Image (cartoon, rainbow, N blue to C red; front, side):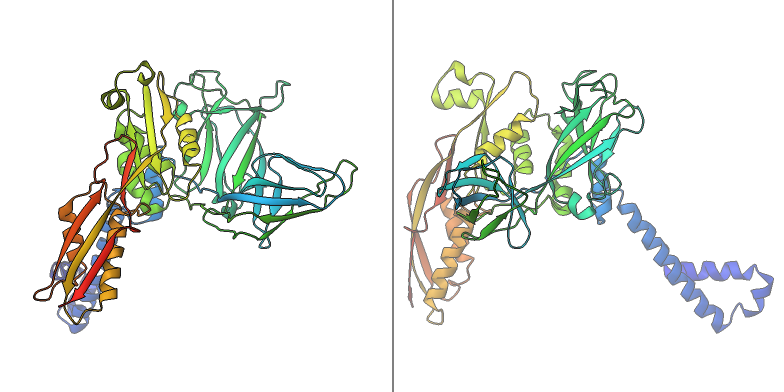
Length: 477
């Protein structure tokens, strides 16, 4: 970077070569002008240097730069995850009512929810059905030209209803194609990077653009199928608000017309049977920037244990504990068994996620891996508890000190703590408790006694502290 003095001297040197400026060469005006120009030059150089830093993932600050890295590396960030729950439906009419899977209902705030399964409610009867906070937007696109790797970007140019706000809400989508051969629409298969896909296969790939938008890409003559001009592509887009909660006991209202067997409008009363929650926002730019560092290592080519762990934690939000093992570890723990051959075992835990196993296994099923099977193993929980006794200075409020110690232990070893330590060591107890700052006075001390299981012996065993049996007893000096 050029210094201020160097830029001033260079500016004066340039002016000295101009006949019209020679008379003013040593004037105060030129001195001030040279200083001003040095500021302009250095500011421009700083801007150029900052722009150069956007070429590197580790120093990029602009969202557009990080998204460009994502597109270059064929990275697909995690989409929004919809909230789920259940709804109790009461049929106030004289005839049974049938609600299909995907029936949309709306809350008082205008948020849409759809049923996960079909249900029939008897006359004057009540039923409960699981729902997901999502709505459906269907878009039809006409292929404009026949070419390899034809792309469709999910943006406003595709459909007037697909605004930027709606595009950001996409949590999933299905692709149907009518090749114009008289067979109508056929659902095509998602094939990540066209892996294990051959020429002529009805497959598509997904991509993420540097503008932060999703899209689909079709094949060429070697992988996938080239779409002919005028072919129709129907996209069923599922939209969600993500991290949104609807409390228990809230009313919902049918969207669209629902009739009974006599053709009369259904008379239904619907309320949430439990809170509809556990939705998650999409992967943010800071998280994407970190994940991009490791993405090229495997790019969904799952080989090593850490590949699976990274893949699952990136695909499914808020996992607090996860363990993956294979045939060798299973045989070492439980003995030889032909059922372990070519099998990958997964066990994980997330707070209040009863369907975590289904979500993880569904995501793994999307990855085509030859001669390998996946099996979910429910986690087993083992606990330990502490007995903490000690003395604190008389100036310390004992209840405050006890609460601080309990909070610190919960944060480091709690079952639902995102910062939970996988390894339990006695020396860490002393460091964590001492770190609360309540034992700095002369004569202050504490002792810790540990009971229970502090080391996992099973492959699917998660160890955490039991705060209900942990006691902290302090007295004043």
